[in-house]
Length: 33
Image (cartoon, rainbow, N blue to C red):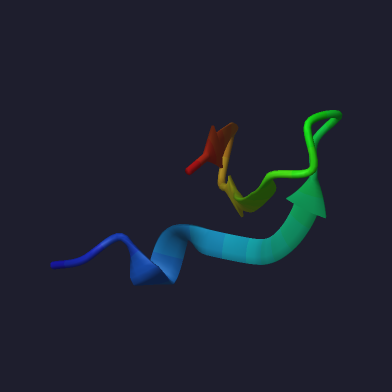
């Protein structure tokens, strides 16, 4: 089993330093890659 079914939403955001980060929302937790 994979964690793909737990992913609710993934979005790309830019931090204060101009770096792009991929933020994925899982059930009950938030994971920032």
